[in-house]
Length: 338
Image 1 (cartoon, rainbow, N blue to C red):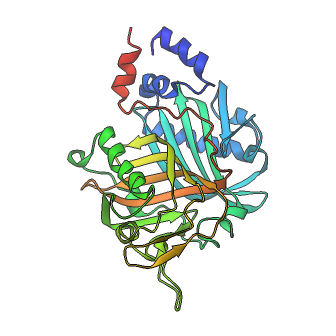
Image 2: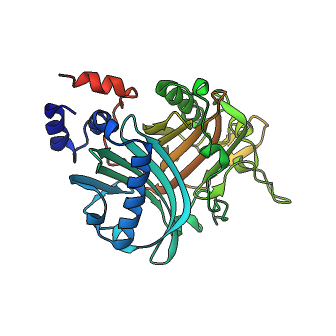
Image 3: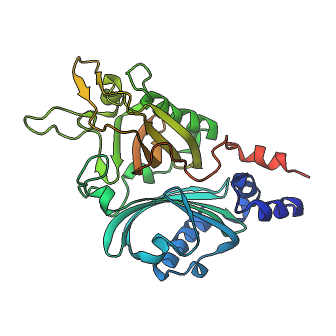
């Protein structure tokens, strides 16, 4: 890393601007194994309630559910255990890593999604979205959460793609965007690039391919990914904003993202493509704050989706710069080249 860029990264390390450019310059200093090791250190440090036990930069910035907090505060004060489940997306090219983990706070179950930005093997940014017990057991997208995560991620998330099947960063962004474009004001006219085996888990519950209970009306959760979108089940998702691509793992076909789902409460009911009417129960505007991981298969289609999300005040922002991120690490390097 050049001296000029190193100074710049120190100056903006706790700001909203350009963290990925700094990470791109320092990426060679921290490969996949290094990033995974920093995640391990981070989680061990949380259990000690002492950020000094993790490799923190002096200017580290921490947000929890969109709110900036000093360290240690929030989860850092009350974390009591870390479970076996861990889904990690390492991006050595940009020096960023995202992970989903099952944890406990004060003995209660939670799901934690976190992005770490790493410069010179130091954590400069921490962005966490946490689904608490109230979200998982009644307040989440599917009510009571069955325990479907187990101890390890689905095998599709863990595979290594052959070199010839790996896509560019921009291709992976474009494929992921077909999902968000298809779900916004969904009417079935913009089908995402879904694989036949597509399945989705949100806050630990399957929200696709679930059996329809006897005597109950089917919902989007009772259909395949393709069917639910084609029928138009998500028409009340009126705006998807602040779309960000936080870590891209080309080797494993994974994209770690952040997005806010707005529901402006103007849609009170809508008709599906099969003629059935869906009535929207919520009467006030609201927003899902979400970190979401997409697995793109060797054919370039979305195979698996997993999300950690919670309801936040309508229109709430994620607490980070949401402008266009540089998807190409070489572009980041060239911009600050001597």
